[in-house]
Image (tube, rainbow, N blue to C red; front, side):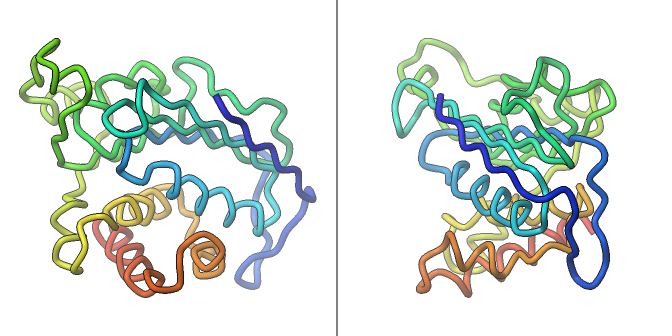
Length: 212
């Protein structure tokens, strides 16, 4: 596990207004290696830090860089003491792949929300035939928790590059968490290669629109 702990001032201004930081928020992002989970988390953390929040981010990698589960935990608020989200404490779970949403559902608070990519991808275990890919995942999620399904792969493909679906999901998360006031353009400039900046900015907006 890798942890990035960044302390910032207790007060901050963004888009001309003061941002509220009293309550610590917990965001869990999960996916399969190669989907860009960590990049999305870094953009998220950068924007929060630049906005004046105290931010803690941790990364947990699966068996391999591609094919294994990748989970990042982002906690932000006025003061955050630990980078780890306790079981059943996440305010929102953002899953880049359908089965991963089920895998980490127990980390979500009973009052929490799920943003899930309507996308299936073999993990190391399903590809090896060690477990079958479950059916009816969206139905199961909706029965248990407040769930928002985003066709991020389709949106990204329509924009010209399916690989930007991670930023589509980031945009959906930002809209769900009401974090639109932060400086997302600067956060992307600090984390995305210039050649892909315009594409990712469009993907980010499309993600926000998907849950408007």
